[in-house]
Length: 126
Image 1 (tube, helix red, strand yellow):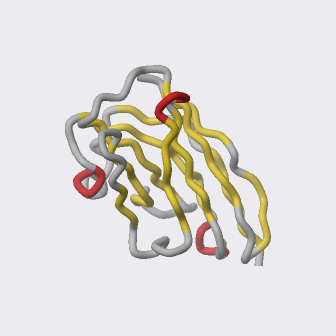
Image 2 (tube, rainbow, N blue to C red):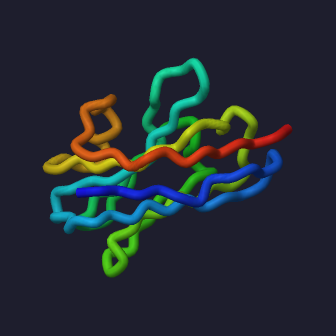
Image 3 (cartoon, rainbow, N blue to C red):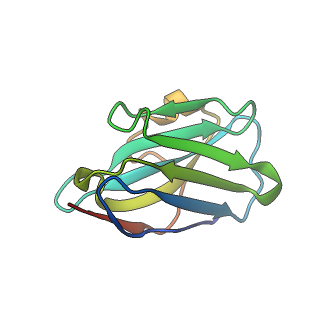
């Protein structure tokens, strides 16, 4: 599976941005896809994930209530709607796929992800 992320950009604090990630391969019901981010000088961290079958979601505490992950099965695409953005949300955002695990489990996988997309940079200015 190849993943391609896009939609990053520069936005002011308090603003919104939507990221998209298109996959080339089919997702099975036990597949989860999600978003991770890596700020300069920091480790990559989990942001949000969604289980393909059933659509259950899971979020990092730092983004709960501000970010929403969703999917469009027909387009084989996941989205990350980011609202109330803060400067600390500045990072390169990566989409990933983990097969055979639900969204909550994906949050604990660290870098043990089956497929990664290229990153897209989100910069939030204060």
